[in-house]
Amino acid sequence: MIITVIEYASTKIIITGDNEAASFSELLEDANFISAIKDADILLAPHHGRESGFNVDFVNYVKPKLSIVSDGRHCDTSVNNRYSQKSSGWTVHKKDKTSSIRKCLTTNSDGAILVQFGFGLQPPNKPFLYVQID
Image (tube, rainbow, N blue to C red):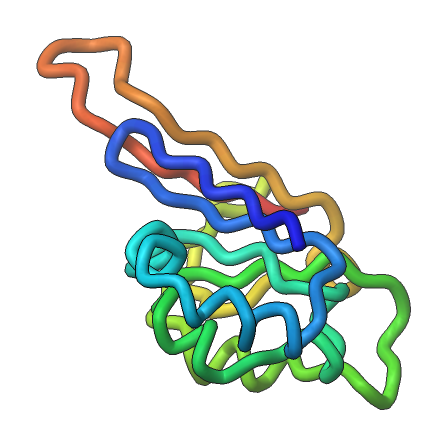
């Protein structure tokens, strides 16, 4: 049950690996875990966005702005729509210079997903989070 929380430059990203729903039920018994995952900017969906990895209580604590699903071809157990419903939305840029507000990205339909975050190079060096798809 390894969950990675990256917090830097006012950005929080939760990387869940292949954990399944039961793992999250156990982890949510720990107040420190709940504190660490709350109000994240990006959630990398567990178990490739499959139903077996979706835990509504976990996602409700995370409250992601954007969910990202690393998946292959569509399958019958995909719950990408549930992640979309639980995400508030973030501006996503395309290489063609257009952008739109998205709630869930998938490698299957969006291709490569680039996430950059940190502090700007120009004063006042504000934190930034930039997401781009193919």
